[in-house]
Length: 226
Ligand code: CA
Image (cartoon, rainbow, N blue to C red):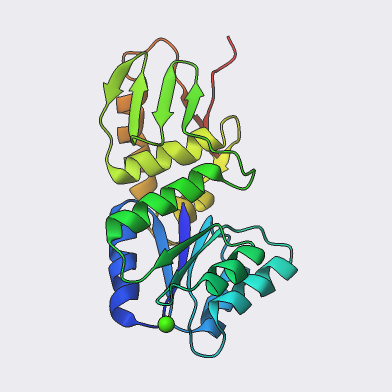
């Protein structure tokens, strides 16, 4: 899943970028309001983390502008000012959460995951199930037929994308941009390699193979028709 961070304090921005990348997210970081808005308008992000006080254009203005354009991207505000009026302003604009500086990374990660589980529908999804395969978004666990499967952060991200969009053929270019921060034009087989590993973990020894390759198109996760 893709996250946009707009934060002008380099240390805080890098700290968030590194932590969220290690947690398996694809992260873009902008250091001022104009660049942040530009990315938000282009990027197809699942979530934005916006600092309130930014050069050129503040976090509220970024959210207000993308909302006016009809984009529903969830947003979490970062602010040093723990003031009631800030919270009200942010929530009126449709912010999904608020984090007051200084914060711990664990707190940010927990809030990010909660907002992403809630998604655009507003109802919180805590697990996704396809046949006997279950992805537990709260505990970050995967099991098939009740048996626990250990995945890396990237493999978990890849499986989460496939399961959230079950039945939909996902082109490699989309997987590349959502799970890896790479251009599909780049000469790499990173997706094929990860997909092969994931399939071994999920489908090997199983009667029903859930991950399918659709030749020339991409990958789909679904229960195959008999
Ligand atoms: Ca700032």
